[in-house]
Length: 363
Image (tube, rainbow, N blue to C red; front, top):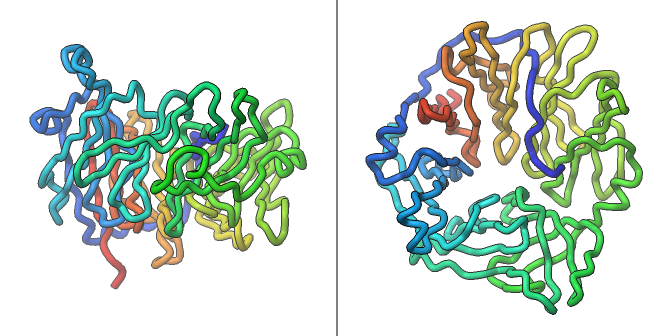
């Protein structure tokens, strides 16, 4: 319900085929295995703001699990040419990593597990794993929705609920996480979500990643008539779009990119939920998929599905008026991650490995 991504098909027109001097590199799964990574259950969480640090994880084999190593986290450092420079491994006794994100100072990683009831902090310097919140019978606490950690504007946010000593849950809230504290004290309530949700019917997906602005997408029972709404502290809930079918969305902080299919074709829009500013990215008849957005909303990535099941990737940036241009073609469909500064794109193609693209800086 609180996931950032709602797949899948978009449209794109007025595309630029001009090739700039982007730096592109590939990392095969075989190369990852030579670095000690078990690629059968490999996941990419984030690319740090420096564009040269990938946060990833794997699930080790049974022999390591017998030793209590249930998951492993990796910091994959890259050279300026986007080749692997080093890999640092962290062995963890955590049964499953539901989400992981850097703390604002980039010195640690916060990890959620056990359906959001356990939250740990991993010190990237000494490798020490310490609990922020662990569910304990008879103790009040906070439980997060396990796939939500938003690192935005120097703050770490999540969505979840407080519960009392009898495990009686309160309403969902957005909270700021202080990774230097432990227990209930680590979570400060910012916005109560339920009163906002009660104003809307048929919520299908949400972007609840910043107390300055949130996005809600609703649909009727047929799933064909959608509405897009923003919430901000000053304006409350406002309708920002309708008369289409939502076919893709992504959120970062107060920003969101959403894609509508209409009787006239397809369109893609960037929205700032805090200010209400809407920026058209595309309007046309060509179909695309898998929107992704950088942390500051300055870079949008889209992909076009080709008849041979390969994909063509496009980027739109604020430095070029968000005019999409091609950055890769004949690639496998991928999970997309963008560095926090919007300058490095990571395409995780499953068994085909990683494609990394460092965007040509504006002239």
